[in-house]
Amino acid sequence: MEKMDINKFRGIFVAMYSAYDEEGEVSISRVKELARSYVHTGVRGLYICGSSGEGILQTAEERKKVVEAVMDEVGKVLTVIVHIGANSTRESVELAIHAEKNGTDAVSAVPAIYYRLSEKAVETHWQKMINASSLPFIIYNIPQTTGFHLTQPLFMKIAKQDKVIGIKMSGESVFELQQFKANAGKEFIVYNGPDEQFLGGRMMGADGGIGGTYGVMPELFCKVDAFIMENKFKEAQELQFKINSIIKRLLDYPSLYGACKYILSLRGIDTGVPRLPLLPVSPTDYQSLTMLNEEILKVIQEYTNIKEKEMMG
Ligand SMILES: CC(=O)N[C@H](C=O)[C@@H](O)[C@H](O)[C@H](O)CO
Ligand SMILES: CC(=O)C(=O)O
Image (cartoon, rainbow, N blue to C red; front, side):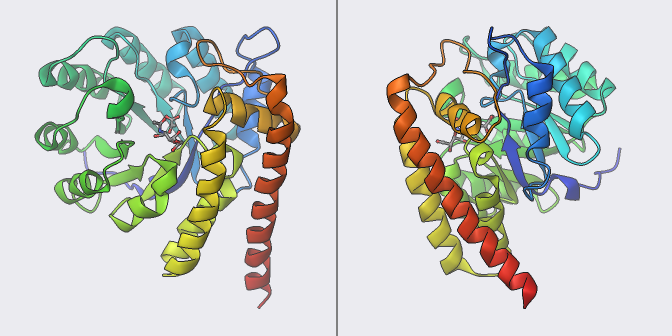
């Protein structure tokens, strides 16, 4: 297989949240509504069933339902990357096959969780998923939650395959991020993971970003990205700092996703609360989140206006 055209994988990808009904069951209509809400925000695509999507808190059947709903709703207009990481290789393989059947653009996975795994075990785990379908594969490296430190040698061994087109680097070292880029070459996509340092990651070689806070402010990350491409680094920095003061506050709540999902509900997009053990926000948080939402919308408004003004002249 030749290296494929990877342009549809560049840019900004919303790590989409879960969407449940009032009973906590995956809601097809809410998944669809949430996916659709990102279509006109400027993002390139969605990363579904990942950390933000609570994939590992859901059964394989539920994850498949999410994939089917997203593909049905936005599969033709957005690039859809499906996280298939699970505890067992067998389940991940099953999800890879399902993702391919449903026409998704790529699959991606963290190393298996819970067990302390050797490099050889993680390599085997990923390789089985890579072999399971003809879809492109994106490594998901997030050492702070999985406890697995991906070394450059193992990375290179996996990344040299044509099917492996990228890595989502959620570790915080931009030096390591840059090493992934340097070791894999130009035609390999490196995604910045930590939203707080999106600009830093991009400056050190990331081609795009996948993030858990993009879901409440996708326009802002698209705008930082646009500033970078126009060499407007001062503007990019100013906006990243505004984003960071928002993220800092989001991280103060019982769970990041609970806070983000509540903010979406204030905008008329109901996705329920996160699944336990991820905590929902409590009623005492509603007021401050209402204010935070208004501030986010104000910043989005401010930067969308800039865009309009630029277009007019
Ligand atoms: C550790 C973690 O979950 N990282 C996410 C993705 O890689 C980020 O998108 C964070 O959710 C975000 O940067 C907020 O800290
Ligand atoms: C947070 C993130 O990027 C994910 O959902 O995997």
